[in-house]
Image (cartoon, rainbow, N blue to C red):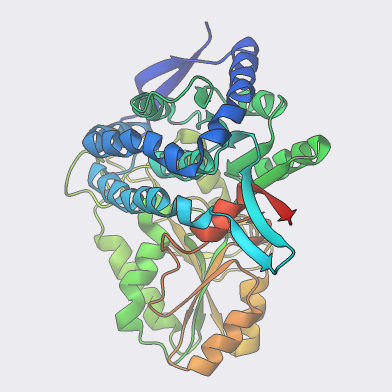
Length: 457
């Protein structure tokens, strides 16, 4: 049996463990079981399904520490940061359970003495859910729980970078003793994901890179099934001349360097009015150079490693390209000398040109580019000069300008000043190469459904 080996990127890639790679025969068997189970799961109704999922929520809460420690070993994020993320995930999990029945309820659209019309949200059927490694439990939970509540049966493929965390997720779901075929998991790399979506499935739910998302979208088109895709991002933040840098500098730093910069919705291109440019660069440099990079198991560590050697090497190649083309390293730009593994210092680059990879590609690591602008029009043009369109931040005390700029930015979410789109009730997704469809909130539930109209006398 072929093995998928998990290594610790923060401990010089020492082996953590392994899982068996799923065979094509096993994948086909699990898809068949999911199809066999989908009618009965649908006919249970939303309320009963939610009741059956409650044990998963309880087991998750009971095993948070175990999840955090294993996640840290597999992807290099400090344990205390993973625990913070899990507490945040709990809010989403609870919201899904508490609001699924409300937002999936039948809706009366017309009624008179002769007719009664209602809209019914029915499950699509079998969902192939493929999720990435950067937030292993959160991505798992966002992809699985709403689908199960909506009545879809699910086959999950978690990332090959965190197979043991994926295995733990499967063990936690088993506590609910769901009917056979309602939930199962397959293991392996992208080839296994491709084999999964090639089977008799009714929905592809994917979070990951734009390259893979586009590939899966073609697959969905050929099969004529729905695809919900949350893909890459190159989010800009626009800091106008009337912003208070002292008030927002910590937020800017966290938005870029949280989770070692490995977040699709992270700030990746900082656009600053020329009057505040030097001040902003210097303050971010100071923050970057005072942060503790080190062992994720140490409570004092503020930034751990990247997820894998390949991710480190990709980041290095992007930075090298920028330097060759004239970018200036303000701080960082190298691996720390005293650490072995996928470590990279918090890095800031200026003197950015549009032919650089760091401008045109998604940068998934602790590296921020800072670019000056002079006018509102220039800022908007720079912000939109990307194939991505996931999110944007705008900092200004001028409310009319904030509203005007927000309307011109091509992105799925806009945060103005201290605004934060990350609420359980708020849908999330992007424009352009950042994906299609939405997750979370009432809209997220309905994305997982077939809409049926029943008109009766």
